[in-house]
Amino acid sequence: MSCFIIFAAALNAVCSGINEFMSKYQTLLYYCYTTIQNAEQFAADHLKFCKSIGLTGRIIVADEGLNGTVSGAPEACQAYMDAVMADERFAKTEFKIDNVDEPSFVKMHVRYKSEIVHSGLRDPQIINPNIRTGKHLEPVDFLAMKDRDDVVILDVRSNYEHSLGKFKNAITLDIENFRDFPDKINELAQYKDKKILTYCTGGIKCEKASALLLQEGFEDVYQLHGGIIKYGKEAGGEDFEGKCYVFDNRLAVDVNSVNPVTISTCRNCGKTTDKMINCANPECNEHFTQCEECGTQMEGCCSAECQTHPRKRVYDGTGYYVKVPQPVNVKKVKVAEA
Image 1 (spheres, rainbow, N blue to C red):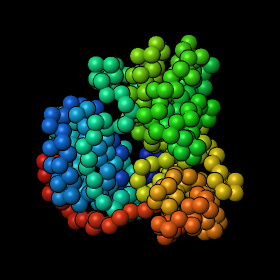
Image 2: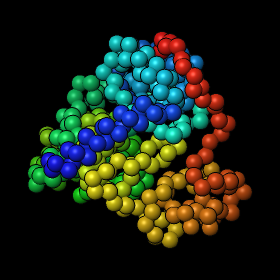
Image 3: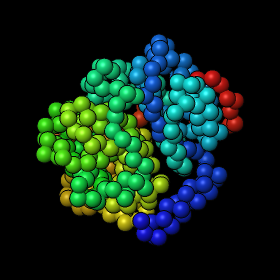
């Protein structure tokens, strides 16, 4: 590892600490595979708790665990982390913390679903990350390993995610949603004699994707621990080309402080751009990249057809659309039990 990379990572850590002290808001990204009894009731109680401390965000609760992104004042975020970690079911949870100028959501949702990430792999007797999954690689180890001849880097995310940014030389799959991943396993058969390094945004998809690869006969399977977000913080994001798509109103974040490049292009004119938006037509709502000029001309729509749709939303330049905002409490909060 070069001295520059070490310096960049150290500088990033120092700046992060300063920003955390000065930051008005934070955004937490996390997941935890663990058994939750009466998960539907837990989801309802968890929603009340999150609202009581002034958080906004989106959390999925299932019998198999938690998957969430929440945002709020630093005191609220700390209270939330303290409460989650105090519950022995979630004691192994790792939080990725970003300092932001404003909350990354405007409402708080906690929903009960069959999985914490939709894969269709619901039988814990076959796929269970707590029992068998790919070996976790810390960011610096992923960095050291990724360019070896016996290694293949596999992006397990969807098209709209890897079109915005991906690791240099990574294999990407033509999938619209993660639930399409199992159908693509056969396309990877030629790499069974390689070390497979899987990665995703925060690590949650790799837990099941790597487990499925092992189930299908791949023997040497790894996963980037903490995903792209943690890699950006601890390894400078080296060789991650483009931006990382995130599931909140930021839509995309920078992770590469070593050798950043832009790889995405405008859907309409082909100009290089890394601005990701949702189509202004709510019945389309497609994620796509669009430059500022085309955004103005097309009113945030992906096509002329969507631009003339009677339900087209007003484009404010962000390409992110919400319903009724929820006030965010920035006062100091009292820690409550989740």
